[in-house]
Every structure is written in structure tokens, then in C-alpha cells.
Image (cartoon, rainbow, N blue to C red; front, side, top):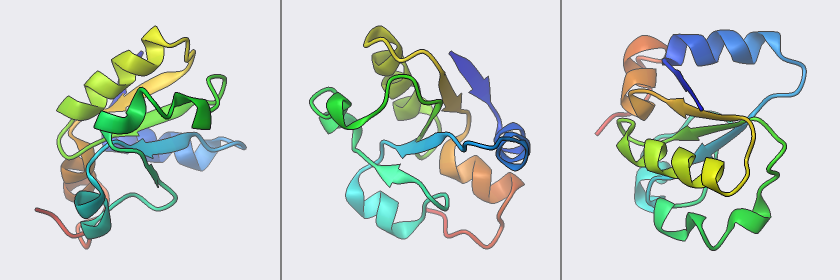
Length: 106
């Protein structure tokens, strides 16, 4: 598993042909407040039962509020055979601070 800061993820997104799946594991109300463009939402509590919706071969960036839930989600993905998993350190809070100051925060 890799651990990237928002600046590392942003740089990666600009140089890849096939973008990674941006998997937001926060609760739906949190996702509605703010999320990275193109992110999909599967709350951490549902992730284990919804793994079949995801491609284990696709590079997957796991995102949450500050990085704790996404780390748990990333561990679950790895334990389930996902090969290319990245945890976004600092979550959407760090993304707002480092990349998009106009993003809503909470």
C-alpha cells in the first residue's frame, strides 16, 4: 500500500492515462458536503459487502475525512486481493488545504 499526500495524488492524476478509482469511504452526508471530483462513495461500513462492485486490478485511492477510515479501508482492500491501493493521507481536509482552498470543509 502506498500513502500519498494530496500533492502527490494531484501530480499522479495529471500524468496517468487511466485515472485511478477515487473511493471515498465517508458517510453519505459527508460526501455530499465535499468530495474530490470524480470520486465514488462507498461508506466504510458497507465496503466489505460491496467489494464486488470494484475492480481489484484497478489502481484505487481510498479517501476519507482525515485519513483514518481510509487507512482501514485500504487495509481491507489489500486483504481482499486488491493489488494497487493508495491511502490519501490527510483526507479531504488535506486536499482542501493543499490543493483546493475553495472546497468546503467540516
